[in-house]
Length: 414
Image (cartoon, rainbow, N blue to C red):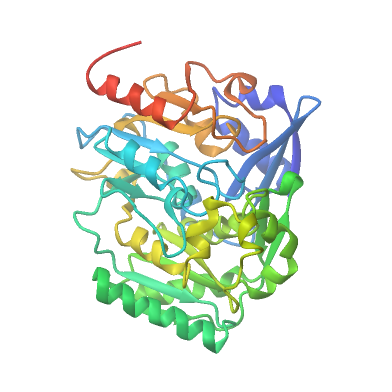
């Protein structure tokens, strides 16, 4: 659903994030599992919000405790590139991998959302990265959960497969799973076919931003529950995107040419949010297509989508990320070695999309350095100055950011 909310009301929420939750409940009748600002006009902010009022979410029942101690001395960073907005860096096919690796070197651990590194079969995820989907990041920045890093990438991964996959697509994905076990030694617990086709749809919002929905979420959640009952510690979701791809051929071609956000990015985020909100477990989505000839004329292809064009499947990067994803721990169950909001020292995001749950949650934390990367834009025009965020470090690009982080590590202040 699209909402228009006065800019001044949004600004008031920077000091009291709970006001925004109450506002959503007042306007929607429920708390959304995904929302974000997608534009501004006449001092009114356009917000996209997706929720499932018929479902009960464990994530919404977590209790925030005050004065939680740090059980670790690690200093961590958080870098996000919102999904489905077409950010000029990281909004395509794993095109921010190099920057994820550079940033990770400056922290004990770096929290990243899957959108930063997923690129079909191609991914170069840093060993120090905490691969964490968007809703889990929101819960972390709200102080509701801690992250428990893996000592090694050995999560037991359960894989939910949409029963509407064609025989050829299913065969391909099963081959990929076997390859992941053989080459990377991943712990693939089991696959679970959904009992019926997942009823998915894609929504293209203003400026081409992507969203979507699932009409039968309980089918997805039932399959995930069956895997969790068997010991799954992370969930990969494979869905049939062939029909949806055909319906959005124009947006797909624009994406391949670098002129539009990924048309399925928003839907992917919603699917992983559903799993995390319900089970407090890492999740990520991989689309599956009957026809992998996705590219328009080669000379028009944008190099940022080349990893996806050169992929046999979109599953490998998801499996590799989930293998090392941290466990999501309710804050009252925190143990030695777990990382919580007290460990967070820096927050890094593109320059013009500073409105979402994590942005609001971190606005009042003066001890967390915040960086807006000026050359990473998507056209939303919600910049920190407009939103009244204070003490924001504006850096021209990620290379300049690395310089600031290195100086900070050496003890220099600015």
